[in-house]
Image (cartoon, rainbow, N blue to C red; front, side):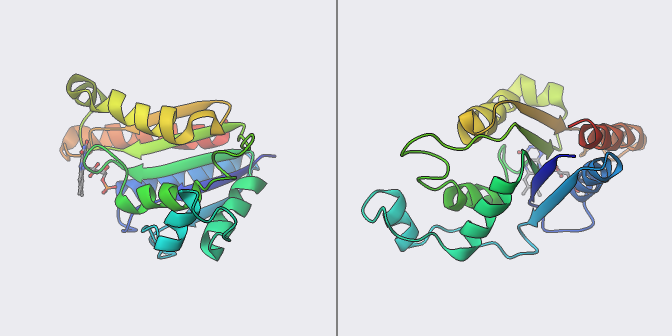
Amino acid sequence: MTQVHVVYAHPSDRSFTREVLDAFVGGLDDAGHSRTVSDLYAMQFRSELSADEYERESGHRPDARVPDDVAGEHARLDAAEVWAFVYPVWWADCPARLKGWFDRVWTAGFAYKPGTVRAARKAFVLCTAGYSIAELEESGCYQAMRTVMVTDRIGARARSSEFVVFGGSVQRDGAWAAVKAEHLAHAAELGRSI
Ligand SMILES: Cc1cc2nc3c(=O)[nH]c(=O)nc-3n(C[C@H](O)[C@H](O)[C@H](O)COP(=O)(O)O)c2cc1C
């Protein structure tokens, strides 16, 4: 049994991204893993760094306490062996709410200096995209998104990472139904096989 913390960012329950979340979590449940989910829109997680938080991170006030919502995320991440981020690609990146989660939750002492930061066994990045993977590779966005999320934001904070794009959702024609079913089966399998 593995403890997993899932960070989910989509404003609507009626979204493909929500279905990917449900499939992944269903896979975790099927395999007997336990999990916490931070649904950043449902929690109304604040994405803007305050002046106090900025001053702590920039070293002007290194001893300042982190806010309670940030401490809550630290506790859920600390308790988990595996982390997962589930979100839609918006303008070649994650939604601003999740970007702000990194701004606020990746604090000094937790995510970087001083000393060694705690590393998860594995991090999953599961994102949905309107473009297909081939189109995202052709434009360079696939490589850019992977570099930003996996190399930079996760980096050494996980001993291994898996970056999965569930692409092609803008073609909502006959072909999409089959592609979507494959994506959801893949998400469930990822959850079962962590
Ligand atoms: C504001 C916005 C920006 C988007 N930007 C991109 C993008 O840069 N690349 C892409 O492949 N898809 C983009 N999309 C499409 C979404 O990635 C796609 O609709 C989503 O991943 C799956 O749909 P869902 O909203 O039903 O979960 C964008 C959608 C929205 C609403």
